[in-house]
Amino acid sequence: MGMDGRAILEVRGLRREFGGVVAVDGVDLVVYEGETISVIGPNGAGKTTLFNLISGLDQPDAGEICLDGRPVTGLPPEVLAARGLARTFQHGRVFGNLSVLDNVLLGAHSRRRATQVRSPWLHLARELFDGLFWPSRARQEEQALRAEAEAILYQGAPFAFVPLPRTTPRARAAAEALAGAVGARPLWLDEWVHDRWVAATSHLPYLLASALAACTPPEAAPLAGPGFRSTTRLASQPSGLMLDILATNRKNVLCALRRVHARLDLFEQLLEAEDYAALQGLLEEGALRRDYFLSISQGETR
Image: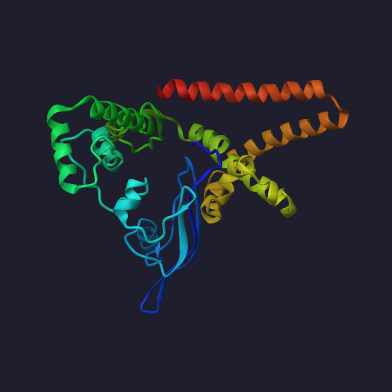
């Protein structure tokens, strides 16, 4: 996911009461560009109310909501949707006669500009005309939206599956079909391979982000810019959830930690010895390894 540090959604001090019952109490939330976050809680914790407030379906008693740095508190859902902020509901209804891509494109309806006019009747007439004759302006916009939708779907992305001893051929076929339905590439892994890989690519980065955030002195806060926020973003994951994951995959996480410890110790030794040529070699090795990972990932998702 892209992490350039730009906050696209900010929620500050959001509060909502219903007859004296506080459903949402002083919620603060920041979502950065390219970021996917989850709101987790038991029934009645206020999750749906929070989404209703953010998307304009309900109005807060206190607090502020900003989209792309501009206040949008109190705006109706249709205005927010036109600005790029919308929500989905807890149902799986789709148009069965449309492809996954076309179902996704329905969500871009409010972003179409070729048919946008002020009058609702003129808007309907414009859409009807474009549907019948498909002029160049509508065709170009359709092509641009389709290209954008294809880029954000799972086209060629790896879907990791770990078969169990009881996994039947029918279950494997269903998993393959699920991946194929969204354009993804199924990747079947043994359990031990999967656990070792995610320890290095997911669990270890979380620990490193947490350590970096905890070791940075509070007085350095004014210099905590986009780079620092991107590097430490994973530290904001729910600790309880991550603790369970780390405990389950403890041995592989420990192995990954030891490898990083060894590299950090080597950095320290070279700095103390002022051996900058060797240090540069290690830094270049890291840059080349990252480029390799990106080239493999991008090559498989094209």
